[in-house]
Length: 112
Image (cartoon, rainbow, N blue to C red):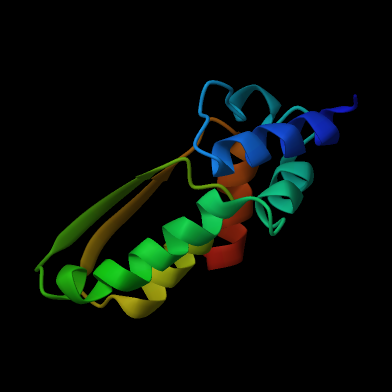
């Protein structure tokens, strides 16, 4: 079984509620682009659920003042892009990731 098949198998298990296996060890084995491609795969629901959650809680976030946001595991910066484009009350945004490539990708994407 190749690594993409293993990733798909883990994602399917997680979608069924089984979190005994993690994607962490596969995340950046073959680089940033591979990570981005599997997170955009329709079977990987964690990403779409995070975006749905952001949209759901956006009104509550907008009601807050002078926000400092720290995002752990920024990935490709999509959630940062959504937050920064929809919030005018963010004083400081800090994205943190174990991959320098992902940080650079997110910075470039968001022109930070």
